[in-house]
Length: 248
Image (cartoon, rainbow, N blue to C red):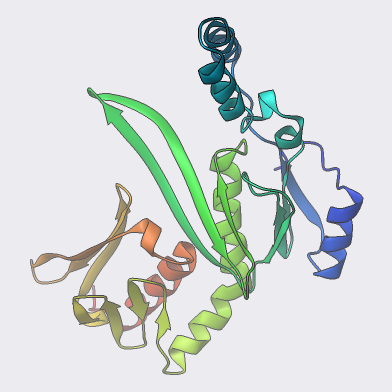
């Protein structure tokens, strides 16, 4: 799965050992510009510096957030381990350690359509751990279509069985705007819906859609970005719906 050489710095290796992250499974480097865009940025910088020095300097300062124009940015990495991850945030210094068994992960995948033409897909994952441990991981790192699902599945493996047991034991588990219990779903602002009334749960166009039985259609729609640990929510909801929902 690795998109870059699996080489850990001494600091990252020590953090991985301290937090018992297990085996390294993948490393991702910052995404680089293509040659055309790189050349355009260089031309724009030189043009602005020649015409107006201050705007040129400001534009070059803005460019330094990009790894093609900053060694510090280029050296950043996203490391995925068996039990968690270590990431250099896009902005700022230092590294953040998150374990799969304690994180709440929110994903936001969007694509703008301009004059009917699809634009680039933008990826943003917000990982919130215990205490002050949190990180926002975006398409700043190459391979988001690989590392994003990998994180969701790793969290499902680490937390899914315990979450299912908690629900089956009679407790309610909150996933953000939606909550699950043994008897049904709860949506913020909508109330409760029993599993016998749930026809289907769909994920489409960036939203989780709960369809009601009996020809009632859509019961509620919630943005995917408002659901913590989406894959756990879907897996547990599917299990409960199959066990307690209407007979086929």
